[in-house]
Amino acid sequence: MSQIAAHLEETRARIAQAEHAAHRPAGCVTLLAVSKTFPAQAVRDAYAAGQRAFGENYVQEALGKITELADLRDALEWHFIGPLQSNKTRQVAEHFDWVHSVDRLKIAQRLSEQRPPGLPPLNICLQVNISGEASKSGVSPDTALEVAHAVAALPRLRLRGLMSIPESADTLDQQRAPHRALHALYETLRADGLALDTLSAGMSSDLEAAVLEGATMVRIGTAIFGARTYAHS
Ligand SMILES: *Cc1c(COP(=O)(O)O)cnc(C)c1O
Image 1: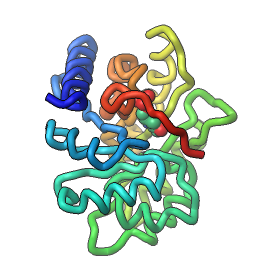
Image 2: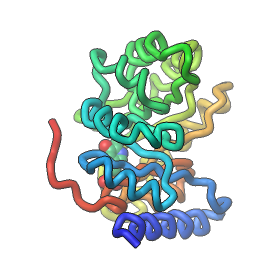
Image 3: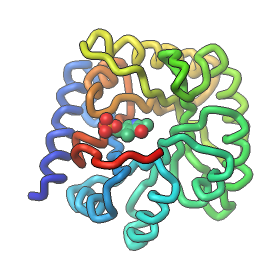
């Protein structure tokens, strides 16, 4: 078994255990494997071990991998999860299946206009700055409802839910607090008529906290592919 296959198995076991601890149905949480900084071969290894959804942060790097893995394109789901500038929206609209990092209406409008008509609607999560950190992107919780309704009305997009990257914390209780707040916001939006089904929350260090607080998708890089050895700007 490859190391990636072994790490995937461990990660799936962590998710299963967290689902059980949370009294949630087995298999209700989707694993998104975050392959940023790792080569196409790592994605191929994960695919061979049954993984289908992959997350990328950097447009150029991701397009290189998507091209290299063109033979698997129909089998894979590509999720863009990194900061997205206006001048990169076209490439994302043309090549990805999901975008988790929509943090303003203007980006959503561009993605909608640029999504090719031959492709299914682009799945969208609105990124929320749930911990209120000045350095983090994301809409503020008090504007999320208004922005979500505006995004949901755009024609070539399908608003699926919310995403956040909470402030890092050491204890499980500290980790749970922002995930709980995100879940509450998600329920508020659903109660206001938005048909959301995705709460994208939890990374390698806090996936248990996220699953306990209702995450439906966790974004896991390090625990699957190992430590990242180079940083992008
Ligand atoms: C890199 C990244 C992840 C994965 O983080 P790990 O700690 O390596 O699991 C998840 N979400 C986003 C938005 C990221 O940028």
